[in-house]
Amino acid sequence: MDQNGPPMKDFWLSCGHHLADRDAGGGLVATDEFLKAYLARPELVPPPEACAAERALSASLLADPRRPVAADEIAAIADADARENWQVMIAFRDHLLAHPTLEAAYRALVARGIGRTPPLFLDQLVHVILRNVLDCCDDPFVLRAAEMMFRPQRVRLHEGSLIAADEETVTGSSPTPISPLVAMLGLDAASAIDVMNDDNAATYWERSDRFDMALDLTAGRRGLEALSLVLKRFIEHLHGVEVEVAPLIEVRDAPLTWYVGLDAEASRIGDALWRDEPLDEATRARVIGLFRARFCDPGAVDARVSGEPVYLLLAMTADKTVRMKPQNLVAGLPLRHLETVT
Image (cartoon, rainbow, N blue to C red; front, side):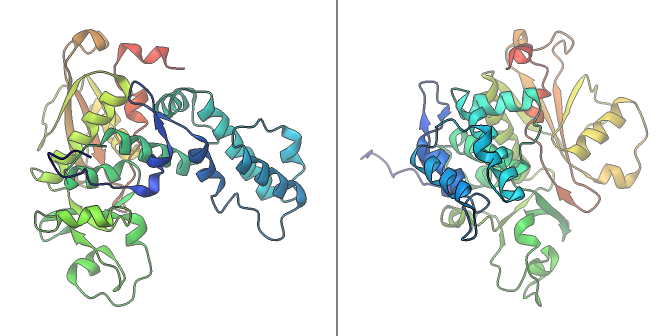
């Protein structure tokens, strides 16, 4: 332990980061223990009524999670839902094992097409990759902003502020609320949720796996600054290029030489702006974040960009939900090396 300073605070234990190894380049390597965490998911644990074939497959993989699985082993499982679950899981496991790091597996998965990979698995990969990226981060605002990359958010305007809270928390049971904030976010009275601020940010370390702190995304405030740092670190880690990302209050008449929607709604709005289509006020109001990215090495960027910044757009849906698609930062940036991703 370093005697010259306090130990680093831990966070996001639920992502399984501690079960993975790191390679020399800082990427995460799947261990047997990491793979077993997937095998312990409720969808894969054989219920009491499971057939002998399913129980045998589960037991053998818990003993050796890397062993090859023949198609007829899965076909022998009696329950159709269980067969499908195992087909998806083994395909995903094989994909992870075919790549040297989890980061490489994620990049390749995005490049080849997600196919039948469950969104939950994609979110879990982003979760653990971000845990690696932010390993030494000591700013709770940055960590809370990073949650947006792998957990959908509900956004509400409250007393002039744009507040984002975890969707899963927001959509829980809702008896009579006990505070204006709880009422605004639709939380039940037993839920303990706070909008992160300087006074309570330190409590994030003990509650990071509860996803029960809301974030202020009002333009010009700390939430979007924190998210810009997350975007920067994520891009740099996955692509190996240096980039500066800054939030903008608004951009009028900005030359959208290249833009990336950070979610489906933002992509739709960006496409409309690209085609010079007028946007009504309701559509404009859905844009909650606009970022300017400048790559430090011009040689790493597609010549069509010609030194212009890349704009990153973030938006909410009509029902005020934000579902970020970090895979767009893998496939959508104008980087020269992307055609080599396999």
